[in-house]
Length: 286
Ligand code: MEV
Image 1 (cartoon, rainbow, N blue to C red):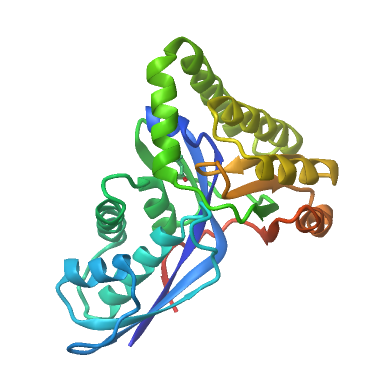
Image 2: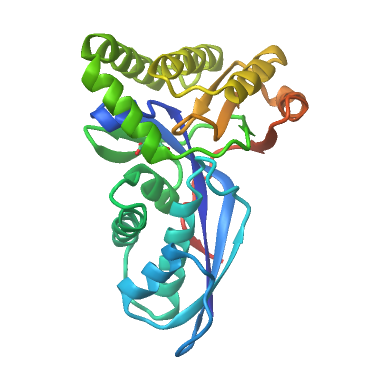
């Protein structure tokens, strides 16, 4: 029997723009998914296409049990965390000798298959390696960790990443003169934020700007506006949607002493709050 866990992720800056080759910054976060794998010939399995594909692709027989601290379908990368943790537990239990980069690339392959062609390589990378991750020129690399106090607000409104990505793509195809400058502005905010991780007030301001630019792309939602406003008015340095938008989650960058107050304000606005910070471990054996 082997148990492995993998973290969730948030996009701090640059979501959607990364799909068009722009830079982005993502981060591994503390809520984790735990997966226990047991050997067996024809064991009953959790009914998950991600887990099915992990066993099929590695060619071993076994069962998997999931314990998740991450809400699913909320843009926090829970399917990537399930896939990465399952592959890692299979790797441990059957001594397959896969290294982290093999786990990340196999997990991405599985996500792509299950999600019929559209998956985020950033989700599987962040879940595997954890930490602060820069996406640049469609490649991902780990940056030195930063101690950011974040509160996540889950709108509990489900969204479909593939549809939102397709919608932005269509908007751009039909209106390149309008959409390209928005993507360029998101790129500028992402690049400037890289130089301002130690100046959290400025970083928060950039989050506000990034949120407005994502709304301009058409991926906002009234519940996201509500939670972002609640966080800002209760003392956050800044707040923005994170991930695909259209529902899902927002993040607020908070002064340490205000985390609880901001979480309460998000709950009062009918969101589910998660107080979190960076997870630098990535996938690990428990
Ligand atoms: C989804 O979490 C983030 C998007 O930028 C899609 C992607 O990066 O693959 C919308």
